[in-house]
Image (cartoon, rainbow, N blue to C red):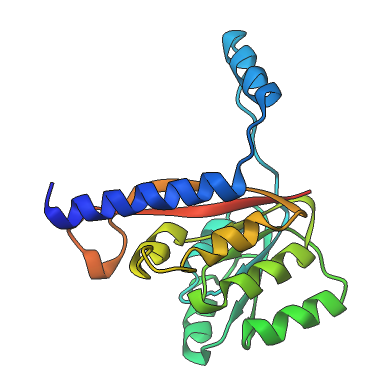
Length: 208
């Protein structure tokens, strides 16, 4: 493992510590329930059977296709006209709508229309994630879920040693309307790190 990789792992450990401190509260009853269920061979459960999905950030429609192929109707928001045009070609034949516009302009309109979604998937501008998350909470039905992609990658890239760079995690942790966790993973998907293993992960929140 290179010195750079060791630094990345150390930073990831720091991110995990921040996550646990802000998002997870000790719950002996839940710990016992998990252990007892495993002991008695109870099956794992699925999260939700989402039929309506809101996607913030379409790009070429890759994630849109994954979401729509489950049978869900996907409403996606894309700010770039060319990206939207390409995405529309890519998702042809699937139950999708791709709205052109800035997410922070479109999201209030969806709320005013009374729209509610089973799931919100956010993979857009990192600098606006806290605002996107707040709108996602408003637009997600109770017991629906919110998935914010590339959280670990973006926190590591922003240098976790600086105060306030974990603001999305602390912001979500203070929101009493959701129960959230961070799902870490190893990834080689980022073109800037082609051929190199990196640490990434997504934030998953369930609306209470």
